[in-house]
Length: 66
Image (tube, rainbow, N blue to C red; front, side):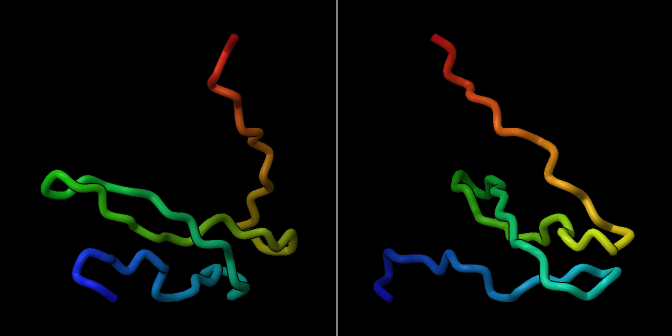
């Protein structure tokens, strides 16, 4: 890796704290010293038998209106 490249892959896999099943990894960003730094966190649990289960009911909205 050259000096201009940065590691952008998550370093670990996340699991649900309730059912211990693997969950998706979500990336957010925060600004530090003028640059955006990636932050990885556990996504919602997709196991319907889990008490932490959250169904994906949100639909992405198209922000471009003609």
